[in-house]
Image: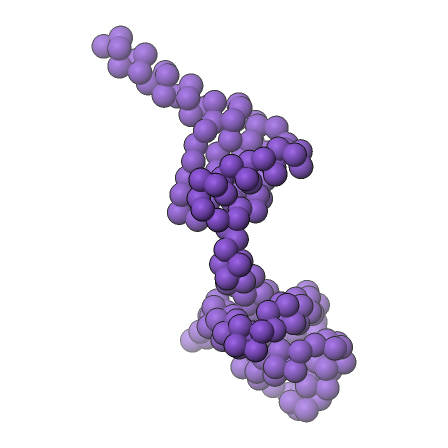
Amino acid sequence: MARITSGKRYAQAAFELAVERNELQSWQESLKRIAEITADTKLVAWLESPKIPFDVKKGLLEERLGEVYALALNLACLLVSKGRLRIAGNILREYDRLLDAYYGIEHADIVTALPLDEEDKQRLSRQLGEMMGRKIVIDAQVDPSVVGGFIAKIGDTLIDASIRNKLEALSKSLVEAGK
């Protein structure tokens, strides 16, 4: 049975090396390039084929990746040799998450009834950042059922400051009062 891996171990190892060598950006850029080549499913299938000699695969990787960090190229070769190149996108996402944590950045999924303009995003980011004690980056979505206000999910924290929530609470209290 084939094992499925999320890429967390690879990302953690790459991140630790990057911190140790102060090469956080080089690693991030290289991991992006590796993840980009996985969009070509035919290339990935070819690179993972046991019929192709590894030296040929490595040469193609070097050609396709261009100027990437040497240790990142080694990681790409390792992924190819283990048949795991397809998880490169997962590795990049996990690396980005570790990088954000390193810099004290937290992502907030914000849902509003109407699209937020840049000024609103910055103000909300600043307010949530003060509340949470770290820098907040807003990932905004629109859902008209929110009616007004916003719903924010930051890590394990949920902040429901929506009109929908207030209306539901009001409706519930009116039903309770009528009993």
